[in-house]
Image (cartoon, rainbow, N blue to C red; front, side):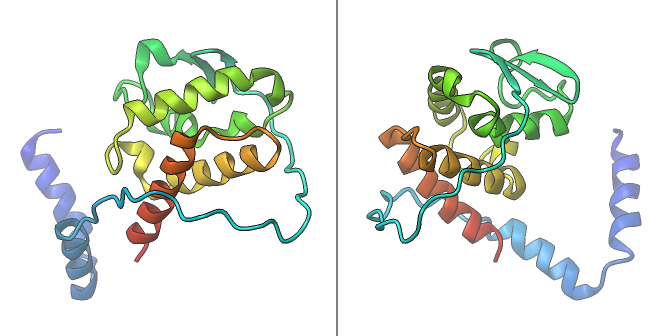
Length: 172
């Protein structure tokens, strides 16, 4: 997009905003929170029995292959944030829905490797994987996976705590 076109787009958007909304957007970008990298808090005792979540369709079709929106892509070829891949497809990749899909137990080794790769390749607070919506769904899916008897690695538990604190700060 050319600079004049982009400037016009900003103007067409901003002219409808109230001053408090403009102030809020500027403040949000100026005071971008930093990730809190402290270790996770101690685990609490389970208060009630766990109810298994509803199962979705399998989306991880190979160790590094995923199918979303009727398109199969390779994580090895495209990575987590390839701009040539549609944003909605990348969002789905960051959700980790396959952790709780049909026959997920048979793909546990793929899941563990994917989680470890996600942690290594998505530094805290950067990339679309750390936007609030994919972060919130990923937190839920990782938690469900752990509660369904497939424990997370210590690094994943640490990362889960960082994600939860990051999300809490981003939504204020």
